[in-house]
Image (cartoon, rainbow, N blue to C red; front, side):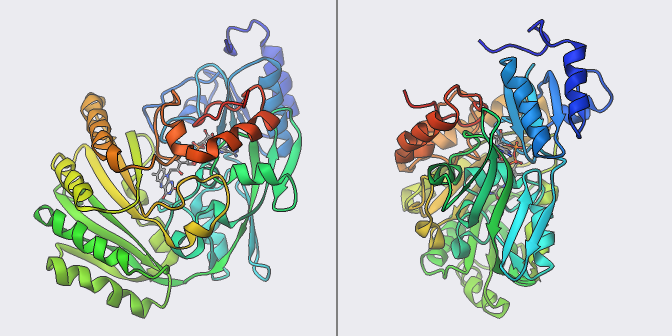
Length: 458
Ligand SMILES: Cc1cc2nc3c(=O)[nH]c(=O)nc-3n(C[C@H](O)[C@H](O)[C@H](O)COP(=O)(O)OP(=O)(O)OC[C@H]3O[C@@H](n4cnc5c(N)ncnc54)[C@H](O)[C@@H]3O)c2cc1C
């Protein structure tokens, strides 16, 4: 069994002092100033008390903090942006290797490549790349860390045109369980490179990512429109029609959610990465089919606005439980389930069903991400503020996932919640055996186990 910093009897103040002296970044122990803020992650359900938080300033810090934990057989939680829905980037009693201070982004506009340190957020990358009229696929909330997001796949507004975030990786630098710094790319450590493109944080600590960039914006056609709740079925049917003929430049989501006043709505959100003038032509048929929206916020906006427009809806420090289901099609029975389960939606608490249109360039990608052939992902998100709402919210998310189960190909590692491994086989599908082989090569003792965990083969 793994130990705690406090119960090893071998981690005294002098050990911590030695680590502190060796690192450029801060080392925070319980009860020290700054510890309480540093231990908190985005999802307040993960209210844990690590034995140490090592806020790494460079690669050597990462190697030292990891070595400290491994030598003492302490649990290791790796943190990029701290947005793990499952709360994997913290732990009780162990060592948090926090890459938050490592956020540098450098852009080679001629080669169209960004080199990004692993503590960066989507906003850090979008800002730096848009200065050159470039971007790569990242998530739709810009405060999310690029590290966890990319390692699990990386779904976002550019995915149908340019692939998932992981499909745009050119290389990663990674510290292995035994403390070596290795590079993985199409030419070096190819199996590791395949595995980090969707296999999550199982294989080591990535210290930097290199992404391929594409010309994007500065103006795109995007935003969202919302209809009254009684139009849910009509919205989903019109959305299905839209997605059937959609060009790869267009990525759309349909959301059964609550509007700004808490009233339930059926919304369609979009990003058209082609000529903004064509965006309205593509999306107007939804209005023709459903009727006038309550709120029409679709139109030209900057790509940076598009990427951050959802940020305020997902602040740090609330409670969350998410599930997800990849689907082959939005069939009538699936729409029945979505409409039925949406009848509980009212805010607060904020229960949401978000249908994400996949396809396009995703199918052509290579790597461990297992659900490339899926046409849709349904994110089932329960978000609440009052602890007393927990049971109701979790029960709603679970029963909705169970109702979609007959149509589901498995869930998305970055959305799935439980730390007990229950969702691992379905999330990794037929990639699991190869992932286990790579795991046994790079992390045979399963040091990196706080994730959707792939057990080492054998
Ligand atoms: C508000 C919100 C919006 C989201 N939107 C999207 C979206 O649009 N698209 C999408 O695809 N996902 C989305 N997600 C899910 C997101 O991809 C995951 O939560 C992801 O884990 C966040 O990455 P992070 O670095 O912030 O997480 P962290 O909590 O820091 O890390 C999560 C896990 O990733 C691994 N990890 C992190 N950093 C490293 C590293 N440097 N090396 C190795 N492993 C590491 C570890 O296993 C860690 O436990 C969203 C999540 C939230 C909370």
